[in-house]
Structures are given as structure tokens and as C-alpha cells.
Length: 75
Image 1 (cartoon, rainbow, N blue to C red):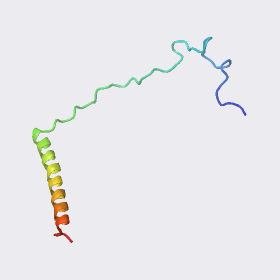
Image 2: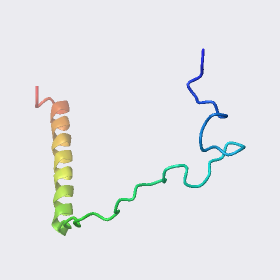
Image 3: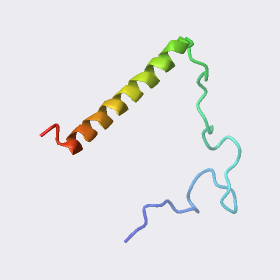
Image 4: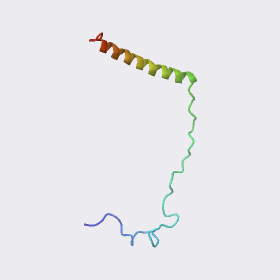
């Protein structure tokens, strides 16, 4: 069975000892711009309060359901 790896003796671009010369390998990262083209709109402070109120409301409704179920009110 042959190995799928190339023979190091026949591989182009290798220096003695297995190193590669500068410019032989591709760059480590892309050359794209890191900044987005548009900055996202900031949410209002009320958005956070509304989100917290919704989560608390769902929790309270769930707790009321389970208490009512345990008390036998909901079949």
C-alpha cells in the first residue's frame, strides 16, 4: 500500500530539514477589510427592559401553570 503523502525528496519548495522558504506558502489571513460597510443601529434602552419583562412574564406564567397543576385546578 502506498502512502497518500508526497515524497519529501520530490516535493517542491522544501529546504533541507523540511522548512519552506519565504513566499512559498500562502498568507495566513485574507486581505479583506475588517470593518463593516455600515455600522449597526443601536437599540434603545427600552429594548432591554422590554426583553427582561417578557422573560420574567413567561417565567411567572410557567410557575403559575405548574402551581395550578399541582393544586389540581388544571386536570
